[in-house]
Image (tube, rainbow, N blue to C red; front, side, top):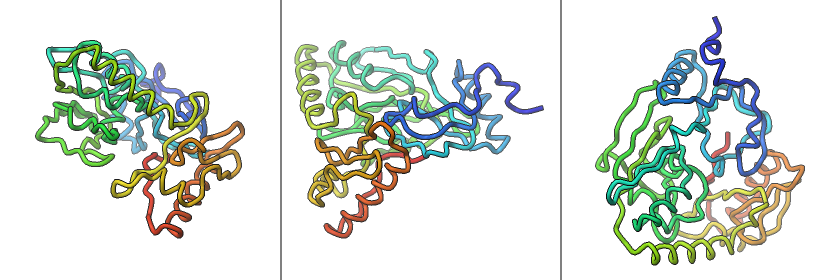
Length: 292
């Protein structure tokens, strides 16, 4: 009996992944699942792992480029409400790994809890933000993380305390398959002041990024604290095109996928940027985006 027969209600074959990513590019998933409970997720993961299927987790899709040929194995999307809940207890905000980071930030600000507002404008889910320790000039998400519940590729659940977690620039020790829930310990502040601070941060960030209607993604990590966008600009690459992919004129660390672009166009442009910056400025750029 095919292992998929046990999960017919939640697994689809050949699901296009482009609509789930910010680039709107790439091929299908061999298997695509949207589990409806934590237990169903665990059972699905255990079975797929036992069958030797590669397993990937898809969050908000803001940090992923899917290759044109698609993705083998199982892609899991945590779209059910049970994975995206947000609640407040005192000065703690508890959020599901599938919750949108923006919703968590606005909830904290509304409740007069400060700390996360500096992350406004960062797309994606709580799980993705924690996995890559998302942040900016005002700090990163790791500094406010008090606890996390994770699930391994074997389908086992574990709690991680603050002392067990390590956060560094754009990475963390939370590298298990799924981050199911996170708890943030924040500071009591005036909601109006927090709102002003958040709005100011939002305006500054959006003024320098590609326009909202454009399919785009941030590509490289900042090497040794130097702005990757500034390096790409210094290398004379703003506006450079390969096929339907173009280096943004507004922020050089973003690549825009124009209508008709392919994932291969973006990949070729990434390699061109990397080699040109290395040749002209002697800096090796490391991708921040995940390539599937």
